[in-house]
Length: 185
Image (cartoon, rainbow, N blue to C red; front, side, top):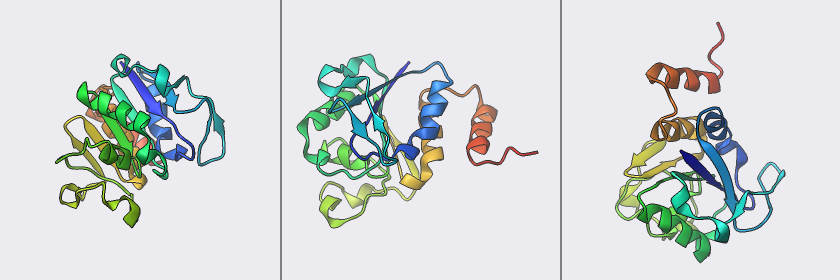
């Protein structure tokens, strides 16, 4: 299986750190994609993605993962929105956390699907249909996995379950305890 992380200027790196670690120690191949040759994440590290969006074929991946961050100005970037639509049209998983579900809404793929998000602010409300906002921290609805930003461990677990990286329920629970620092004897 193959995972693709979309990285962009100012993305929130820690919201995907547990997930990227979980995938990296499993049999999942990971690539990164961006609109530019280099981005700087919230922690101020400069990152050189593997691919630019123009050079990336969604059919080669099983999941698109989008970290949170400020959606502007990418919420209006048709290259990104079309890219997201292609994943959805192919029925592939799309996972978005914190502010990133705004991209899914702007692309028109949330439709009448339940979703979770941390995004607030009047400038983004027109993208969302509040009737479908979930009360859960993480929501899995069809091929979409969305989450509030503070649920990054749970988000990672939900994506891991979708990608079938856990041997069994015990393996899944042990992973949660590890990331919640509760494995001390």
